[in-house]
Length: 282
Image (cartoon, rainbow, N blue to C red; front, top):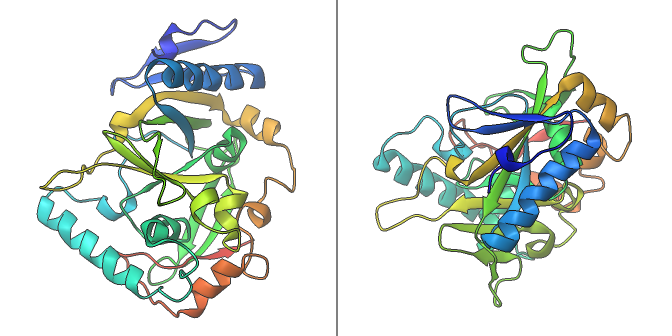
């Protein structure tokens, strides 16, 4: 079932050259109904759970940060090796979290990994679609978010990707980890204690496609089930100026997010191809 089957007054869907179905939502009711439609039909008929990812523009591929710019299995293997080496340096601050969630958790705080970020709250996804991340530093460690401005923005649109995971079977021995035939999912609200405040503030989950004996897929776009398009001016109006949807709330500073503070004390230098623990300016 696809968004092009959905009929809502005053709205329409189109299919772009990449085969992506884009549904233009003109009001908040259409936004919620379209998202709810896919959550319902994919969950009840296809045994998939649908989550959200906000984007300021559309890309032909959905590639995790560790694999961007890569095209060979050798490069992929090298990237995975770098990730595993980096994870080993965070043993002390991650001791309260199961090892199965370490990579996903570090992705949330800035490392480049094999997972992609998703959220289970459409307004958080829309916030990310309405803001641009800016970073500087040797490994882009100093980051801040700028609110997009409709009159100067290159696209004038905000996008919410509806991404499905067949990872619905819970792992009874590893809380927050789910597995399916094609994907695996970590719900950090379960896998990580709230001493790591950021994933809880963002309703954060991470998903990745399963690999085989050769390697892991580099492009995860096969999991996209639809795209919601919103005029940027409308999206900003819907979000308003709530302090609950602000950089300070979604990226709590170390004085509130003790887990974040503990990660910073490791002194991990990071690198361009590994990432780092980001310093978020609020």
